[in-house]
Structures are given as C-alpha cells and as structure tokens.
Amino acid sequence: MRFDVITLFPELFTPFFKSGVTRRAYEGGLVDVRLWNLRDFADGNYRRVDDRPFGGGPGMVMMAEPLARCLEAVQRDRADSAPVVLFSPIGARLDHAAVTQWSASAGAVLVCGRYEGIDQRFIDAHVDVQISLGDFVLSGGEIAAMALLDAVARLQPGVLNDAGSHQEDSFNPALDGLLDCPHFTKPREWMGREVPEVLLSGLSRIPGMSVDMVLSPSDAQWFEKQRGGRGLRRLAAKGWRPTLVTPPTGDHSLLQRDGQNVVRAQLMTVAMREFPESQRLPVRPPAEDEPSEVRT
Image (cartoon, rainbow, N blue to C red; front, side, top):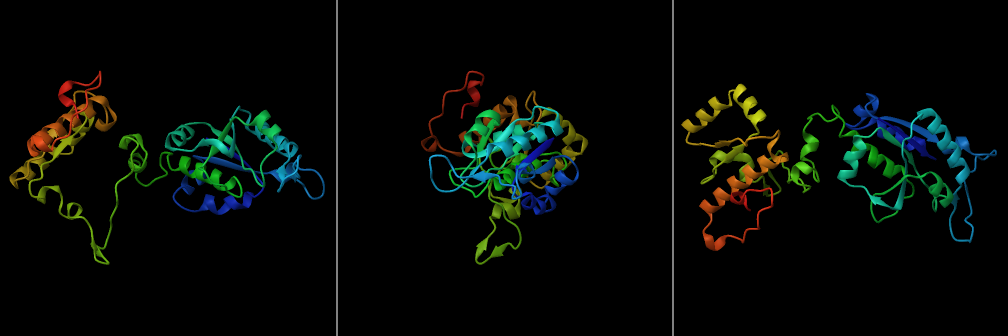
C-alpha cells in the first residue's frame, strides 16, 4: 500500500510518522508514504505556486501547472493508476466505511490544497475523488491527509497491540455501526465518582443475573480445546450456571446471520421470563430470512 502526498509543507508530516502506535505501519512499510514538495515543480527563483484569482476576490489560488508537473512525476514513479484524491469541502464526508475501503486498497495520490483553493481546471482534469472531514475549513489539506493515513494505518495487521481492538471501535460493523461503550480504569473511585459495580464484581455476583454465551462452531471447538467445559463445571459448583449456545453455522457469531438469530432468540427468552407482559414493547415483524421465533 502506497500513498503519495503532494504538499507545500512536507515537514508537517515528520513528527506524525514518528509518533504513536501507527508509526509501526510507516516504519515497517505496511503503509508506504512518500512526500512530494510542490515547490520543486514550480518556476522562477521564488518557486511560485499561487496567483490572484480571475474575477477578483480575496486570497490566492494554487496554479494548475506546478500541480500537473508534480502529479506527472508521481505517476511516473508509481507506474500504476492510483486514484488522485483532493481534500475539499465539497467532497464526500470521510467515515468508517470509506476508511475500511481505503485500508484494503493499493493506496492513492493525496493532494493537499492551500490558500483559497486549487485552479478548477486541474481538478476537472486530474482529480478522481474529493474527500471532506466535515463542515468546517482547515488552513490546508495536510491535517485531512494525516487523518486518512492514521485511520488507514491502524487497520493494518500488526499495528495495534491487540489485533481485535479496531473491531470494537465505534462505527465498526461488528457493533452494527454504533458507538463504543464507556471505559473505566484505576482508581475505583475518583472525585466521588465510582466505577460501575458490574465492572468490578463480575456478572456472576450480581443478584438475579444470568449469562448466556453464544459461540460460533469454530469458537466453540476452540473453547473446548482450552478446557472451557471444565471451567463451566467449576462455575456451576459455585452456583453460577452460564448457558453455552452454539449456532448451526458461521464464523464469529455476531457477524453472521445464524449467530444473530440465536442471540435474538436468547434475548427474547430472557425478556419473556424477566419482564411482565405489561412492560413489553410491541415487536417488529420478522425479516423474510428470519425465523418468526426470533422476532425482537
């Protein structure tokens, strides 16, 4: 994976590549980032890359010719047809789905604009994708480029200490695109605020709490190999009897339809047992591929 960055300020990226957990991606070559100083492709003693806009108005506009020369050099060096990306307020807003796609791609050429913007003729001739971080304005595209590179780098295998960390991130499909839960660490009490009891005592010690574990077939086999059954028997001897449920097919249960259906069925069973009918909300009709007994 290779990203080429066209920028007027390559020095801004130096600390970015050497700090934090994502530096593993850059130092290890998982994400190859190459910086191109736009002024190296400008004319004159002053290496001018901008000029006043036709039609008047405040600010300066980046000239098309230096950008085109730089892009041509990048494309010769890459020898592929990588998409050209411009960070722009009119672009599609960057989200988790887009980051996931970029993380599985061969990379791109990232154009970092400055001043009032870029000559539209360059955009029309060369830009394939425009990306926005949101409805606000930055002084340049470098911060937006770093945001994309950071989001892509942390999804590469071996970058995070825990390979499954990003699977529990906010907006991940594993969480149905929802936000991650609140997190707590030591001390147990801080400025009169305590960690929730459920995180301190364990589920087995909460009065009236019952636990159902849903494991995919492959996970259930691994669980047995790790003597999980023996652990369940020890818990049963202490009065805690978690229920182990295995869907008929699928890999990781919450990412697969059969697993989702089993979870829904278990939740329905518990809800019917624990809540009187007067407290229940109306259920939705089942989906076409969903058994009626797992309606939620």
